[in-house]
Length: 632
View 1: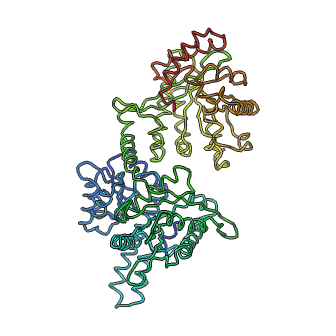
View 2: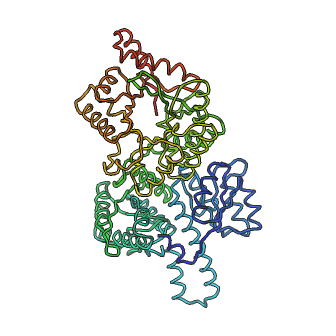
View 3: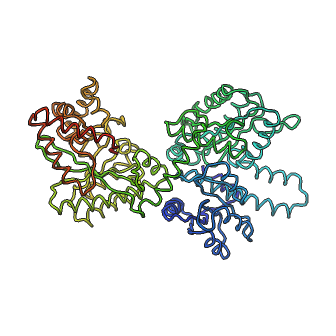
C-alpha cells in the first residue's frame, strides 16, 4: 500500500518538521510519525522552525493553523518567500469552514489535514505530498535537460497528474478537473455530485494478506470504479475532456484507501444514489488476491454543487464530513452532507481545544462510586469516573469522551486518571476506609499502548498498593478482537498485579469460546439489561443468563445501573449480590466518599432487612433526584 510514494522516487525515512504551540498535540503527532521510523523535529512556533530551516532542509513541514503571534498562515507565507519555497506544506487545522481552507491554500499550503488521530490517513497524505514534490523536482530537471522531447515530456506530465499505483488522477489533478466541472455546472445551472469512497477497515487487508496484496486490491478497486461509472453513465470515467471541451465524470485516488468521484449533469439526488449504488455493488463483489477471496465494504460521503458548496475545496470538505458520519454510525453506507454539521463541528472543535488544556489547568477530577455486596451489606470497592468542569459548567462525559477518543487525547487522559485515582485510593485506605479494590475504565486505545503496563506498575508501586487492588475494566470487544495478540497483554497485566473485568457485558456479542479463555475475575452486567428488570420477562432472562454464565466461569458478577430496591431484590433472587448504582450511591469526589459509603451500607441493610415502606421511599426519592447526572 505504501509502495506508491516510493515508486516515484521519494525515499523514506522522511524528515518532518511539526509546528504547533500545543505540547500535547506535538507529542501525539511526533510519536505517531516516529513509530514509522521517520525523523521528526517539533517546534512550538513558526519563527523557531524557520530559524532551523535556514540550516536544515525538511522533506515536509506540518504547521498548525492557529498559533499565537505568528499563525500557521503567516508561517506558510514566510516559507514560500524563503530559499526553501519548494518544501511541501501541510496545514493542520481544526477549522473546517470554507474560508479557513481557502486561506490555507492562498498562504501557500499544499494541502490541509483536519486534526484527528487518523494516523494512517495522515501518513498517506504526507507520503503523497513528498512524492508530488519529488516528481515536480524531477520534472523541472527533465525540462532543463530535455531538448524539446515531446514523448518524454508527455510521460513526465502523466506522472505528475496520476497516482502511480492505480494510474487514476491524483488529488491535485482531481481538484483542477473539479474546478472546471463546477464552473461549467454554474454556467449551465446544473448540479454536480462529489463523492468520497473510503474502504472500511482497509488496514486489516494489509495486516492479514500483506502490503503487496493491499496494493493489488487498491488497483482493482480503481479499475472497478471506472468500469462501474462507464456502465452507469455511459461516459469516459477517467476525466477526459469530451466534445466542445465539456468535462465528463472523473474518478481519482486520494492518499491512503480513499477514492473520489465527480459526477456532473446530475438532475436529482435519486440519480446520484443510483449511480453510487452501481459503484458500490461492483466493489462489494469478492476480490481474488493470490488465490484467496477478499471482501470489502465502503463508506461513502456525498456533497452536491451548488447546494452543499460552491468551490472544489468546500465540496470535498463537506463530502469528507459526510463520510465520517457514515463511519461513526457503523460504516458500509452512503451519507449526504447535512448543513447542520457546521454547528456540530464548531462545538466539537471547542471541546477538542478545551481538552488539550484541561489537565494542565486542573479541570479534570476523579469521582468515585461504591459498589455494594448485599450478602454482607458492605462496600468492598469503588469505580473511578472522570469528570470535567470548565468554569461553572460540568461537561457530560457523553460529550467529551468520544472527542477524546477520536483525537487520541484519551490516552494521556486515561494515564492521568489511572495515576490520580490510585493516589486518592491509597489515601482513602490510609485514612481507614476499608476498600479492597479500585476499578478504572481503560479505553481500547489506551489498552493497545505499551504504556498501560508501565503505568499500572507505577500506580501500584508509587502508592504502596498491594497486588490485585486495581481492577482494569475493559470492554469485551476490546478483549477478544485479535485474540491471540490480546491474550498475552492481558496476562502481562495480571502478572503486574491487576485484576481484569469485562465492562458492559452483553453488548459485545463475544464468542463463548473466547470468554472461557479470558483471564478475568469479574463480569459487569450492562445497565441496559438491569433497567429491564420488572418491565419485561426478557430483561430477567438476559440477566439470569449472564449471572449463570459468570457462575459457570467462576467469576464475580456485578450488576451496574441499579436504581430501585425492586431491581436489587430481583438480582439477589437471580444469584447476583454485588451491585452498583444510584440506589446505593451516586458518584462523588474523594472528600465525600466516606459519607457515600455509609449511606450505601444503610440502603443495603434496608433492602436485605426488609425496611419499612417509608424508609425505602426516602432512599428511592434521594436516588431519583440524582438520576440527572451521567454516571459514565
